[in-house]
Figure 1 (cartoon, rainbow, N blue to C red):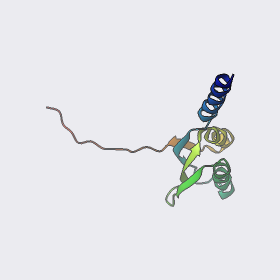
Figure 2 (figure 1 turned 90 degrees about the vertical axis):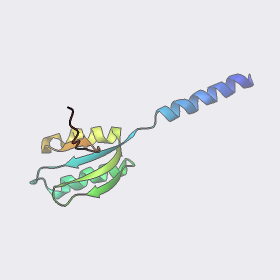
Figure 3 (figure 1 turned 180 degrees about the vertical axis):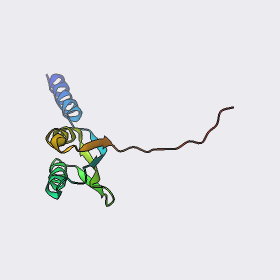
Length: 100
């Protein structure tokens, strides 16, 4: 009987671990005419969901963040009318290799 209880507890823990929302590094950019309250709403939503704003851009209207996948989808949905672009933050490399 104790073995069944132990297995059930282990399965519950494993299920809880797999339910954790994956954090992604993203860049969120807005058209220049977007009002600051829309930008701030996106940042607030991300922070309330446990994400962090890692950088606020000065040359473009936008920011970088690390956020749970579920909130990225939610912000993407409500911000679509404002033409917000949300993309995964990645390393970009330029290669100058020539094949002969």
